[in-house]
Length: 242
Length: 242
Image 1: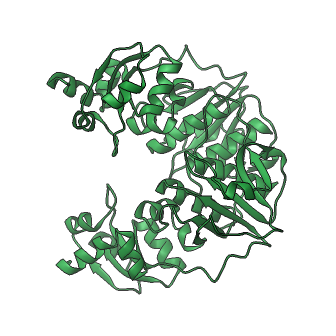
Image 2 (image 1 turned 120 degrees about the horizontal axis):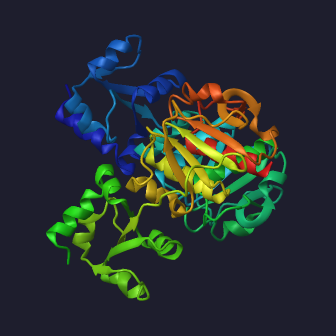
Image 3 (image 1 turned 30 degrees about the horizontal axis):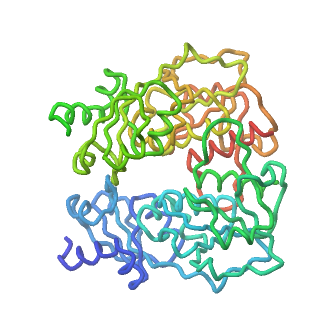
């Protein structure tokens, strides 16, 4: 059973302001619940249907049984799925370290699906740092969390004002632009930044002028552009694998 | 002004059955409208707000002016955007030709965003043929159409029963599997099939046993999997660019 106050509180976590004040976020579904319970101590509370609870008897955090109707009231998914997890937001350990690893910089990624997918790509290719411009979508937005498929617990994300953030003069800055070097001939890259731009505007000033190594995914066909997450997957894969 | 019948008719095209019977589909927004008007003669009717009509005076197909309220009633987007296009479905020219080009085979792609993005990837890399298993999402689903960003007008898509479809013994069949050859060392591939599996089940029997060249995107980090469209982008890019 959910009290009125619990219901109100969980629903309030759908809003960034309340989410950040409480330093919490919501993740849904058995798969994500399993990832979160497995990977971090920060799960605060679980609301789940009897079905889920009976399959997960060894869980060591507080669990409240709720009905399917209650689930649908706290869920932010079109098709709610057994369990809603309230978890602590992660604070990255200090400032990003740029000189010994590849770091992704996102300049205005707006689409939650793209953001989540990019975090998942980073996790797959072991890119452990993402720097988001302040106008990127919130990584704890419900749709972002769902599309990360759990990778949100492993990749460190910072928000920065890219108008005033300086990566440092000795840092190589790769950027996805139209007339750069063919990404399939760049070869392996062990450190530096990879900048991915906004879905429609691309990389904006002033950060675009910081790019030292423009790279391009050659277009052989007729599509006007590639989706930002697809471009990220292709470029990161090439840089990591050489 | 929309008549009641027009409203009912346009809304009915949101359903696959009615869409297929009429051999029509709906595309929305100025960008997609422009692509469709530019690339094909098959636009049947346009419903648009005065704003769009005033910017597009040279359009040669029937245009009905509608109000913002009417737009929101026929739109399938969360944020309707100026124009709804009713266009003819394209019939691919005959059967797919497999022996002189790369063809993508989709085994149970369910997510409309993935399907649309894969069509867009194909168009970018000049892959002109996609074969979909019968249980793939409909390519004329509104969300698919929107995510193709117009590429739906250029890539030929067929639906096949993959339980009974035989590509032919001399056709190389690449498939994204867990223990295949590193995709970054496969090199350029000019013809054959590339099979991409369902979002959670992967490539299924019986088609999985037709794979002659298993390929893998090496995992360096910890994510359990990559999104199906991301995997497609990475693999197609590598095969096309060598």
